[in-house]
Image (tube, rainbow, N blue to C red):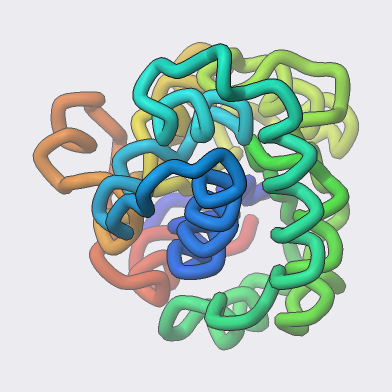
Length: 215
């Protein structure tokens, strides 16, 4: 097993299955502009690059329809944050296993949602740092948020692992010089993740315990 001093996790599609609640807020926003709803599978393809890009994709390039759309989405999502969202299997037990290590979360959604979502699902106390889309740092796949956590906590890059379900997580990790681990159970197809070339791949969250040991 590989020794690890710091874990950095993506949120949506990695720790928490938020797809249904995100889709509900997207379709609420589309309805406000007289647009037809889109499927959860479409939303799955569109997430990962922040709220504005999610909505641009959902509106199929209809930028003129976007004025006010982000605010409508946020208001709905704020009130419906944890309707159907839930932790993926073994997340809580695995975080408990690694609780001696510092852990952080990097999300391309804003911190106004990240913190409350984690708190309501009972995992907020496991994490020393949260970096959201409104942190002032470039979104993943830029490495800035990864480097911010590594530097702040003081962990060696060669013992830092970023775990996520998207290619943006792999690209951010590689650019930052840390270990990368893709979660295939999330929002992105496994073949897409393989092409990104992560150092490790997991099909279930508890597999982290077989790959890494606290250092």
